[in-house]
Structures are given as structure tokens and as C-alpha cells.
Image (cartoon, rainbow, N blue to C red; front, side, top):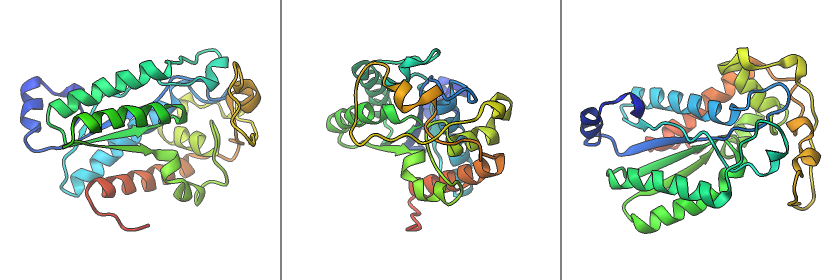
Length: 241
């Protein structure tokens, strides 16, 4: 069920049979010259849709909430089109959204995160909600990180605007991908350097990987395995892989 499509009486009735809500969280930021600014939200939205469909097949109900489009993206703020929300403000905003779901009676909130910069603020927000609402648990699912081994069985590498993300976008929004502009390479730093505009060093042109090998077929394979595993985890059917 998509929350924004329900009336309030329908929502009230749904709460009686559904205890889990999925909240997609992303960002609006540069993803090379070849991917749209909304990549980090498009991906978790699509995964949430597939997870809901798979859970229905498993006989499990879930509510999919409207996404949080803007995130904490200090590093990529060096590039035009990136909208960076300060970590404290972002944490507080997501915390209040989760508080409302806890007050409504949902016992499990799944933060389906699509952006690395969101990680620390989301952990802090989840801890505050868990402390205030002991009957509610928060799951933080970083789709590209938590299922890294599965993704690397499909792609040769991973990275920001890289082969994995580009493949996923080719599968779900191919009209927004400019493969003729898809180029880059992996950059690493031995320590975490925090300074203004560091993104231009770590993410030249907004990329940190080689996206040239991306295909829609690889993207479909990634989406399939990730959504299947998330659905089974929510339904309590962990296959141990």
C-alpha cells in the first residue's frame, strides 16, 4: 500500500492489520554527468515497490511511506544541483517522521536508505526513536552496502554513480541515463578527509567508479536479489545467505 494514495479512514483501517512501514530515504545530488540528481531516491523507491509486491506474495502486509527526497550530502555539495541538508536538521526531520509512525502504532519502521551521507544522522534519529518508543524497532537498510556481496556477484565494482548504480538506473529509468557521458574511476583515501569541496578530489565529475560496464540486465539482477532478500527479512524468512 502506498500511504499517499490512501484516505485517512483507509489508513486507520490498515493500521489494524499492518505493523511495518517502509520509509525510502535518498538525496538530491550530483551523480556524474550521466545520472540524474534523484538517483539515490529513485533506487530505494523502486526497491520498496518490489519489496511490497514480494511481501504480498508471501502473505505479509506492509505500508510504503512517501520518500524523504533531500538528504545530508556534504561531500557532493561541491557540484551544481546538489541540495545538502545539515546533519542535525536532517536527523531531526527524519526522527519526527518516525515518531509519528510510532505514535500511529507501527511497531517496525524500515528506513530504506539510498545515500551514504545519510547513514550517521539516520542512526542517531533511530536511536532517539527507539529510546522513546520501546515497542517500536527501527531497521536501517542501506541497499548497496548491506547486500554488497550479492551486488558484486553481478557487477565488477561498486561506487558512487558507478557500475551498480548506473545499472539500476538503466533498469528503472533508462530515459534519464546518458551512457555517452558515463566515465570515471575509483578513488580512495587512506583517512577520511573533511574539508570544503573535498568532493571534487574524491568524486571527479561526481563519480567514484567506472560506470562504463553498466547494463539494464545487471540492474534488474541487482534489484531482484536485493528486493527479494529485504522482503524475506521483513517476513521473517531469513535464508541465511
